[in-house]
Amino acid sequence: MPASGQKSPSMRRWRNGNGSGRTRCASIFYQLSILSKLAIQHFRENGGGRIVNMASRAGQRGYTSSAMAYGASKAALINLTKSIALSHGHEGVTSVALAPGWVRTEMAEAFIAEHGEAAALAGIPIARMADPQEIGEIVAFAFHPSPGLFERRCAGRKRRQLHEVMSMRFKEKVVIVTGAAGGIGGAISARFAAEGAQVIVTDMNGEGAEATVSQIVAEGDCARALVSDISTADGCQAIIQNVIATEGRIDVLCNNAGINRRGNLLSLTSDDWNLSFAINVDSMFHLCQAVLPHLIEAGGGVIVNTASQWASIRRRTTLPIM
Image 1 (cartoon, rainbow, N blue to C red):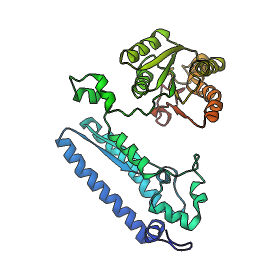
Image 2: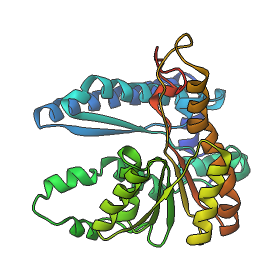
Image 3: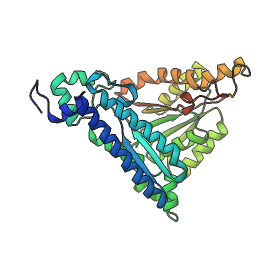
Image 4: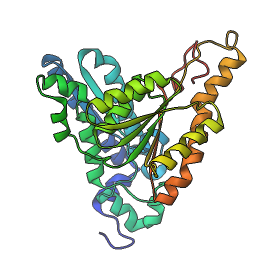
């Protein structure tokens, strides 16, 4: 690590705001676009493929003059990734951009040497940098086929054999999934259970929740159904209280439930509007508020909220879900 007051060559290149710095960023971006073009041509001829581009949070939020070229180039990379996905997804070519914050690399260490670690951690809620290994795991996840694809490639094998290649990351963990009577919630529940979790399958549709549980138990995994109405604060509190009383802990809360009452301001009723917000927004507030004391007391946990692309893409007939 360079002594205080000194800048490493990599740091000077990163922070260089003059013409050479901008030229370097533009040159790298151009090279990435050429690589992507060649990869797309190969993938189209060979049945598809996936491109993962390493962007940065700087490309989403902008940057100060100390790294303006860096932020602008990463924003361009995110846009390029989206353009590739939109243009070539139908050909089996998928494109993903990862946009991490600070990662403990040579560039980060150079910044810390000049400004101190507190400056780097100031905008990070968990108050630590990511390790390169963590980013490697995310990249591997982006390439990993879904269980459905994997099962089709391994036709003839029993699904139980897949557990040998799946990591049991959630063994003995307790996971709550809302809106889990089917669809996305059912798939989330099945995947958590396959990786060792005790899953609480919650939904207003008791028959659907039981069906999800039956499918999970048939595979030898653990789950139970909990019929619940998350449109009220009391209903949300009841879920958390029930799980704490029965399982004794909560490790993961997946706020997956959502509804879509279609219509614009002229056609929507007050009931449509109020129910959409009660399920899509208020339930997440009430459930998070109820579970947070238990997660804090236990020393940590995870909350995952399922949103939608419709939150950022305008639609004429889906006003409440936006």
